[in-house]
Length: 212
Ligand code: BEZ
Image 1: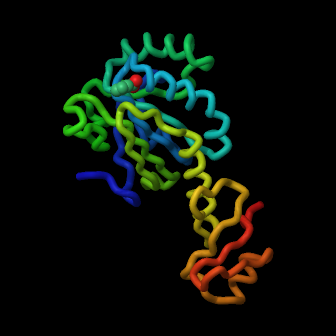
Image 2: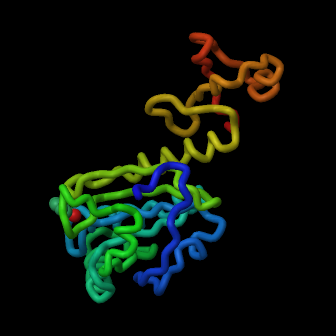
Image 3: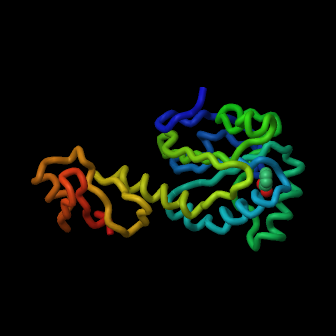
């Protein structure tokens, strides 16, 4: 069955470039981003893996561990990792699952047969410290992902977990946010949002980001 937001991310044990990984144990108390690549030695994937390696400090700031997946064997991954270091200005610094038996790809429904019977699409799963799936994005194989956008969504998830707010269109960390419509009590609103708010409509109340 397809995985949905709010589900517990399926656990698995699989080989990777950093040894055998038991997923839930490996995640520990961190957030996680699990993302798939159609196959090894492909140009778009090579750029993505270099980019996520460069962004490692940004993921660490947010307590997020990154883990990639490609359906080729570990022996290929090892050769490809050399190419990534050579061409992307940054060596791979997170595990890449060797999912040659497609165990994880099938578990996470990463193979979309009407696109390709054999290779994964570009799936992204953001998983929280309770192992719940919080975000799912699917790109076609020919479109490289925007990992800055994925960091932005993690900022939103982490903010909205801690405050009674939602983030508006194109929001970036530090910008104004929206008070959740379910919050009606004026005294509570004053207490939670001491910087005040602007009611554009009764259901659209804008306030400065509370943790800035
Ligand atoms: C790539 O990963 O580079 C790629 C994969 C499938 C189609 C086109 C490009």
